Image 1 (cartoon, rainbow, N blue to C red):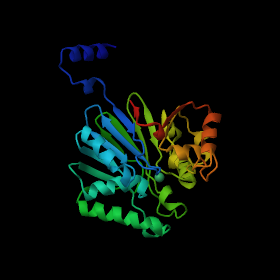
Image 2: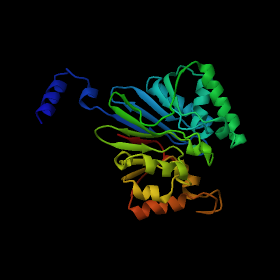
Image 3: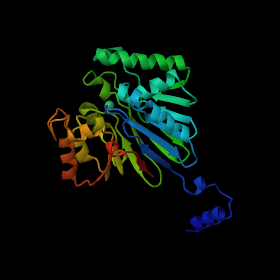
Image 4: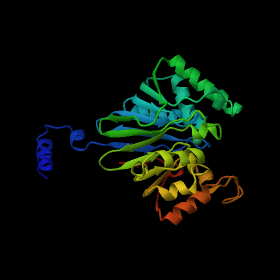
Length: 289
Ligand SMILES: [Fe+2]
C-alpha cells in the first residue's frame, strides 16, 4: 500500500517513466493477410522493447513489417516455434530483405535431418528459411533443452518444451517450442503447433502450475493439435485462436463443418469446459494487456 502510494507520488511528480509503475507487456495476435492459417504474435514490453513469436506466412510479411515499424523496427527476440511456412514464411522474407528491421536474437529448436526428411514438400521451405537465417549473420540461439527462464523488462518467459529429436511422428508440429509468458497481470501458454505426442510430453514433464494460465494459444490453429485430455487437464480462462474463418468453421464453401478440419470438435471441447472468452485471428487484431 505504502509502496503504491510512493510510486504514484513519484509518477505524479514526473520522476518515473510510466513503464516503471506498470511493469508488464502487451501481446498482439495478428490477423491473417492471406487465405492460409498462420501464427503470429508481437509483444511489446511497457518499456518499449519488442519480441515476436513466429510472424506468419510470406503473405503476412508486409503487414508485419508495418506493425514492427510502428513499434520502432527493432525486435530483441524472435522465436520460431518450428520451421513450417505459416510460422517462418514472413521471417524468411524479412531475413532476405530486412527493410530496416533489426533483430537481436533468433531463438529456435533445430530439427534433425531425419525429422526434416519426414515431409519432403515441407523440407524445401524449411531449408530456404535456414539458408536465409545463416546468410543473415544474425545471432541465433538453438534451444536443445527446456527450462530456460528469460526476462525482457516486465516480460517473464520460460521455455517449457523444445524439439525432441527422437520424435518422427508429426515431426514438424511436435517440434514446436512451447513458451510460458507472464507479468503481474496475466499469464499465457503459447503452444505453437504442438501435436498429440508433444502435448502428452508436456503433461508428463511440466508441473501443472506452469501450464495453468489465463490465456492459452490453441495448438495447431485450434484443430488436430494437443488431445482433449490436455485441454481438460490444464486450467485457463480464455483462448487465443490463430485461426482463419474457414478453419474456424471447417468450411471451404460447402457449409459449416463440411471439410476436413477438426476445429468444431475443439470448439465443442471448449464449450464443455465452460470457456466463453475466445480471441480469434479471423475477427481482426487482438490485443492482450
Ligand atoms: Fe501452423
